[in-house]
Image 1 (cartoon, rainbow, N blue to C red):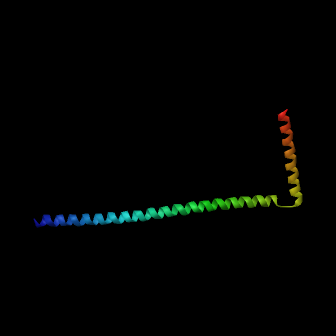
Image 2: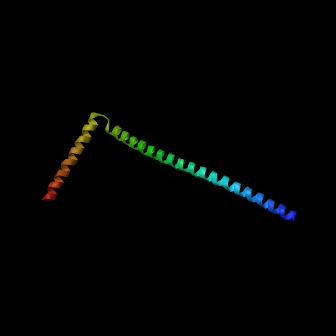
Length: 96
C-alpha cells in the first residue's frame, strides 16, 4: 500500500511540475505577444517615416531638376506655353 501511495505522490509531483511549467510558458507567451505588438507598431511607424522621407527626397529631386540656370527655366516655360497653345487648338477643333 505504501508503494501505491508513493507512486501516487510521485505522479502528483510531476503533475504539479507540469502545471507550473504550463503557467510559466503561458506567461512567456503573453510577454512575447506584447513584444510582438510593440515591434509591429514600431515597424508601422518606421514605414510611415520612410514614406515621408521618400516624398521629401522626391520633392527635393524635382526642385533640384527645375532649379538651374534662368535660360533652362525660360526654355521649360516656353515648352509649357507651346503645349498649352497646342491643347487650346485641339479644344477648339473638338468643339467644331
